Amino acid sequence: MLVPMKTIVDEAYKGGYGVPALPAHNELLIRGAIEAAVESNSPLIFLVGNFNDGEFNRQMIRHFADQVDIPIATCLDHSPTFNDCVMGIRTGVTCIMADRSMLSYEDNVAQVKALAEVAHAAGVSIEAELGHVGQGDNYAVDGVSMLTDPDEAKKFIEETGVDCLAVAVGTAHGQYKGTPHIDFERLQAINEKCHHPLVLHGGSGTGDENISKACTMGIAKVNVVTDVLQNAVRHVLNSEVDFTEGNNGFRLCPTIQAAAKEMALHMFDVCGCTGKAVGTGLPGLWKAPPRPVRPSAI
Ligand SMILES: [Zn+2]
Image 1 (tube, rainbow, N blue to C red):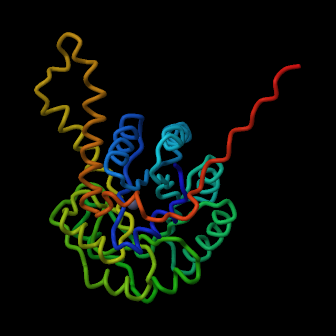
Image 2: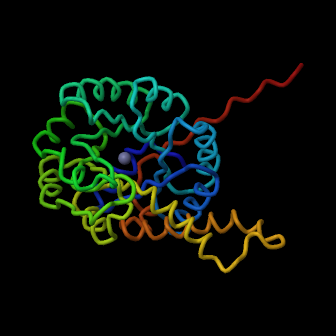
């Protein structure tokens, strides 16, 4: 079932575990991740966008989510404008990620606060970012700059009312050039100040041990995209099947779906959320309202 993302990250934060947020670019990735979540009784978050017919993918997630008894959330990742966020809410995401991390602190607060009011009025959760998580291919610079200040984070959460906060503690988006170094002291300080669900962007390539540790220190959501995509590519390239021979082309899609499932199962274990979709006492899980019935022709 589809739930506001707050439901999932609040439970994760209380329980001292994290939940992976996985890509939803197409049906194979969506089906693979949901299969994994059902099989391992894990909560699941999908990262969605307003690009590449994102609304269609969201409808597909809702269609599958309505059929399974595990909590699933959809998070509109890095939505840079007011219109983008409102469009996401209108087309049914259960969380918007209002990334204003490149603005000044004051402008970040002002824009996120306004969007929090809109999102909450619509029953949608909101994530924001303080400090700035950069790019892995510029890691020498991005890995050590614009890290999140613990005192500022506490103030930001109070001033904006966000449901969870993405923090910059040494991770970066995409593939790392160099070895990632996580500033756990900083993360601990942020967690002790804020007592609020935190989010780790740039989970791919960060290392299982680092992610597992971070998930015991307030990280309730871990974004992992590149690792899922690369696992799919590896499965296809390293397969013993020659997909170009005979009717083997039919095996391509199931291979990609199985790779997505495999990585999802792995990330549930790494984040510590395997089995957490059962017995978590999730209060009154939100259910999509029934579709209006078309009046029959007279
Ligand atoms: Zn990100």
